[in-house]
Amino acid sequence: MAIKQSIEYKSDKGYFAGFLQYLIDESGIVGSVAQENRSITLMLDDSNQAKVQAFNEAVAKYLPHSIFMGEIRTEVVDAVIEPSTFESQDYPIAPCMACMERLNTPSSEHYLDGNMLCDHYANLAQTRYEDSTIFSPHYSQGSTLLLTNASKANELFILTSDELKALFSIEKPTIKVTIADPTLQEMSGKKFIKIKAPYNNKSLLASINAKESEIDYLFFHAEQDLEAVVVQKNISLISNPHEKLERFNNDSVINRFSSIQKEEGFQNAIGCYLSTKGICFVVANEVGVKRVIDYGAFDLAKVMEEFKSSVKRTKLMENFKEKYPSVVAVLESSEMGLYESIATILELDEISFEALSDKSYEFRGNGGLKIDTHFSEDGDFDYADFIGSIISFKLAGVETHYLAYSIFEALADMSISVCNQLKTKFKIEHFIMLGNLFGNSVLYSRVLSKFQLANPYFSPVIALDD
Figure (tube, rainbow, N blue to C red):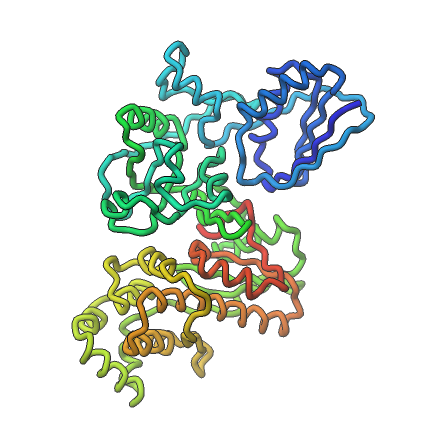
């Protein structure tokens, strides 16, 4: 008889199956592991209970969690096991538990060895990934926090169990969380911050030194980073610098959409791309794939000119200028993007998308204001109407965090409305959601809840944006 485990695995990357092969070999149990079609099959001979126990103990101690893991089904079957020799490629993953032991143990030949390569997932261990990151105990604007003392995670931050799993997974993505520690809040001047667990040898060695000095966290600026968002039970990658997509189209949005379409096997699909780089909707059917709605670039100077084109808008801007002259002066003299313009209108301390996103998290209620998300007569998105609606609520004294929350909720509702219209027009049932605006959990949650019956697809493997 044999123990058979069918493990849902949402990625084609081989390192998780590789870890299982390594543990089979190390424990001496007769076993096999195979990976195909988003599934890993593990077979173990249960005739030798001592070796079964040795394998289980090794799994408990050394097998990492992966953000791509799904359900596990275990059964006892009558089968003859052919021992496997599964081989994995090298991947830019974090040091595993065995590597962490090597680096932390003074008697180990790899003690504090920054050049050590992980060879614990049936890989050749020949690829070295360079990292020029500088870690500091001092916070600076835009820093990501490196958690050097894992035992302090729940003291420093408010984390769900799914966020903890993602944070300490073998992939070690960066996630944004709520700060619980008053000292950290005061140091950073923030209520929310991006955090990461040690993700390679260099960051692990920095963490070891920091922990020995009783420093629970360090700060760094990441040029390229694996970022994820955890919403309800969904874990989505927002960006992945190591990702290499098949080339379907020279349009990067369509290419990413087509990659996700192929991944899930949709014949026809509607794509909703919400990004700081722009908003558009894509349709793929038997005719081909193309952008069917494109909001176009935001032009602040053009929007300010449009406020002069009608009596109503002119009056609104005059009232706003009377109450907030310095804000209007900045809007009239600057070249800013959409979210920077909104952050300016809301008078946020930092003029950025991140600041606007963080402000939206401060509202803990349900149901936002009705921000206008209309299209103009020529079919373009009416940015002036959108901005004017925000200004109107600002003048009405709406609390800043509630207004920021409402903006992301309105963008979610707008995208759902457009998707439904495209569904009716093209008779397509599948929806692919992508773009870095989904890094905002207010927007993401709204789409999940209000568009639930349409079952919108968020790729668990392919990043939602470049």
